[in-house]
Length: 331
Image 1: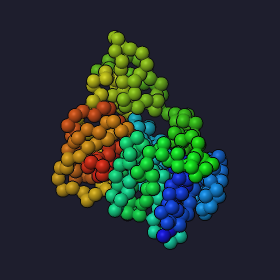
Image 2: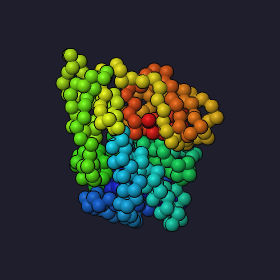
Image 3: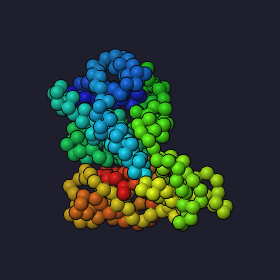
Image 4: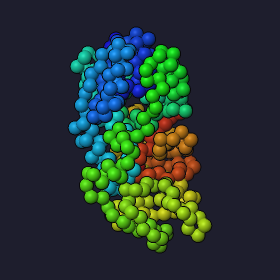
């Protein structure tokens, strides 16, 4: 059996390759090239060490169309987009499956910490669960997906890499957005065009001061200093007026939200469904809820207990126990 593995040259993809071969797969690596020379060199050297073939695919045009441009537009609307959630179905897994079809491979694989079993997506181990990031995979992509690290924690992955003497065993995890390696997303946005200028900070309709631009802020973020002895947080960003509304901590919590363009990884329910919801890539905040599918493809989510600062542009992901039901973009 042949599998095409998304191969970055990091410890996760390297250990995934070793585990797939141990399980009897013929592994072919695919490196998605976004002009990072150091990462490309690591991928080539690690693939050679593992003795697996590696293809390098330039994805700059696809990344610009499907991820970078929407990411920029979302920020200008006052939202907080997650580029990996945009990229996975439209760039990464599309490229993996197209390569698999060309090579006659039955499956594709990545180093994500989640479980793909029988066409269903499940949480990984709590310490490293990345199922949230895969919520917008298409069901036909999920049907052919193998996730060899699904039952592991990162510490176990690194320990196995050491035992295998992999050259990337101690390589640091990549924490930045791949197309913004210096983490300066505001600088990146500014190089793409003019950004909104200063505007008012408002608390319950009163102007408290001036912000330098809406792209510098996200819902839930604390502003510096105190107001009448209290900490204040961003509760809403209004791109139309260029204003940022503030609130004390207790006013950030919401019991209802709506997720548009919901992507179901199960048969779409005909009526309300009980679930748990995650509104950001954290493991500690997942209240029980009732989800109401709407005719326009969105889902209204009523939480049993309030959820903190659901940010427009982020994803709301529904779970039935360990299983991912699907996800949509918070509005």
